[in-house]
Image (cartoon, rainbow, N blue to C red; front, side):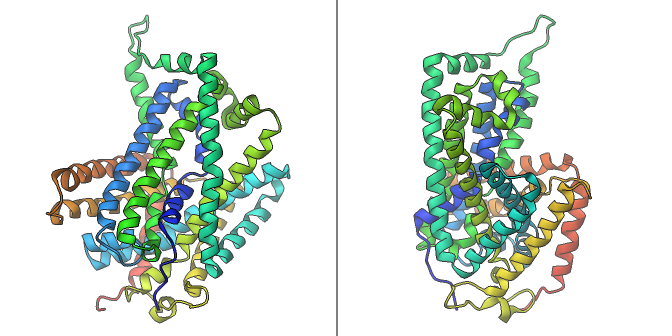
Length: 447
C-alpha cells in the first residue's frame, strides 16, 4: 500500500526552512565574525556566498524533482542519473549514516537549550536527550500528520521573531550609526608594513564560507517526502527554491540586525551569548526568556524534520524491491500511514549514533566532526545528478541545462574537498565503506 499525499506546498516549504534554520542561525554569528577577523561586511558576504551555494544546489535538484517522482527524493535522482546500484548505496548511506547522525546531534543540541530555558543543571542533559528522542520518533512513527502540523507551526513561530529582531535591530543600528560604522570596514586598506589586508581577509572569508555552508545544510531532506507531497512535481521544486530563499534572507537579515545592535568587538567578546545580549539591549531582560524559548522551538523543528526523514529510510529501500526483508519494510500501516519496522530501524540506528556522541562528549573517545563529514560526502552523489541534467534534459534552455548544473558541480566539489582536512576524515570514510559494504550483501540485482 502506498503512502497518502498528505503534505501540501506550505508543509514542504516549512520542512526546508524548519530543518535548515536551527541553532546555527542563533549561534554561528560570533564564529563567522571571528573567522573574518571582526569584519562585519566580510561576514555578511560569507553568509551570502554560503546562501548562494544553497540556492544553486536547490535550484539544480529542483529541476530533476520536477521530472522524477518515486520515493525518497535524492535516491530517485541518483538512481535516475546513474544506475540502480548507486541509488541503493545512497539510500543506505542516508538510512544508516546521514539521517541518524544529524538526528542524534540535533537532539543533543535541543536538550541543551531546554536546560538553558528552564535553568536546569547540565548533568541532566542526557536524560532530556532521551526524552526528546523518544517524543520525536513516537510522534513521527505513529502520528505523521501531527508531525507535519508541528513542522509548519515551529517554522512560523521561529521565523517571525527572527524577522522582528532583524528589522528592529537594523533600525536601531541605523539610528545609532552602528550599522554604518561596521559596514565601512568593508573597504580594504594597505597596512604601513606593505601587507595587503585583501589577501589575508580573502583566506579568512573562504574559511567562513565553509562554516556557513554547513549551517545552510538540510534542504535536501525535504526530498525524502516527495511521494507524500500533493502534486509533488510542481510543489517540491517550488518548496526547494522558496524555502532556500527564505533561509538565506533570514540569515542575512538576522545577522545584520544582530551586528547592528552590538559592535564587532562585543560580538567577539560575548561569543555564543551575543544574540541574548542583543535581545536584552533591544527589549529588556524579560525578553531573554522568550528568546530562549524560540531557540528551543527552532531546534525541535529541525529535530522533527530530520526524524521525519529518518523513519522512512528502510521503507524507501524496500519499495525498490531491494535490501533485506523487503515485504517487512515495504507495506504501509493504513492507520498510521507509515511503516513501523522502518521507523524502528531509524530509531535504533539513531540511538546507536547518539551513543557515539555520548562517548565523544564525555571524552571517552576522540571528538570528530562526523556531522559535517556526513554532509560533505553526500554532496559527491549530487554531481552525478548535475551531469545527468546536462546529458539528458535536451528540452531545457542553456541556462538551466548547463549554467546551473556546472555551478552546482563547483559548489559540490568545494564543500567535499574542503572537508578532507577535517579531523577524523579517514576514520569516517572507513566506517562508511564498512557499513555500505555490509549492505551490499543484501543488494538484489534482479527486480
